[in-house]
Length: 255
Length: 267
Image (cartoon, rainbow over all chains, first blue to last red; front, top):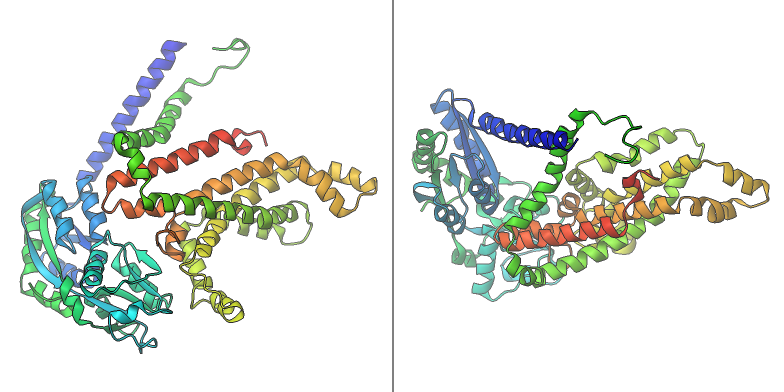
């Protein structure tokens, strides 16, 4: 009876191991022209446009973009998620990728973003400056310090000496924007590009101190990417004329 | 295998293979977490202010949510099991909704009801000057929403299994409805209430999706243990793993100390 049990356990382990290898095979057996791009949430609009343009210029190629917080994305890549290109919203998270040796060549900065205050249309709370955000009775939402928009917010706080009392620290910039568009918060600190993307649903209030916390956006092809050649082409495309047009159109500055 | 092995019908051999795989699927990820953890530094990591605040907040909110589950869900279970009102089957199905709904959807639903722009939220603000969004109350509400079905479903099942015989006898002996409820119905299903509460507490402790959507994330106010893990995982994986282990320990304590009878199949 015991031997039977042992055989069963061994069979189970073998089965489990078999299941693993077959799923690996399924993962690498992607269709010929699929390019996987992991990009910061703030790139949603500009990269969405570039995706269509790149696909139009490369028939048969299907670009899949997964948008999210840069730190979450880089962690996915380090932990083995399939990815061909990584576009980060700051240098810090790109450094994590290069430290893990997962970059194909040096990362290149393709855009610069700065913070802006998003408020309800018509600015009912009359917020005119960064200091206004610290006033009592103003519900402010920011990014958590762990993500790029949050560390930029922290830099501005340090530079101005104004301490914010946010009601929530969100995990990515789009969640902050949502809290403002849904009317839950009076103001949110997001990027200029996010205000542009939600025109009509929010108004933007620019403030000079934002210049103290500019975010560089680096991009790189991932090492040993399944689509290495295509990945390099996509990076060049983002840095090229069409990329520049899409990025400035969304409100980014060029490096 | 056992003393009675000879008389028992043997278990089909093929059950062992999927059974062991299933067990491995449950146990191995936790082992992976332990292997990945920085055990030497663990005490420091789980006593960081962020983790302590999160644990404190999680315990407080989960306890309040569990009490709410009992106070609101208990009576609902009794009504579902005993009332002969028409349309009860529909209500019974509706109660299950939070159990099958992805929590993030529940969070959105709560947000659009109780948020500043939602009609429930507007009503509360105009009537009482109350703002729920981004508050600890919102956390409790989200936890109660997802946890309540565990109590209602378990308790209702126990009530139906127990039947109405004792209650009928008590009534013929002259006991009024309230006395019957207090002296017969409740003692009869006390074990089911206990196990239901344990499950509610565990579910409330683990709540994530509805909380982050409805309540946001702020240390000491709305950032419970699961949200703390999520935030830490962005930058500081060692701390995230340590806090995760803390949640695993809390879960194991819940299972061991108050072994839910529902789970053991002797309701």
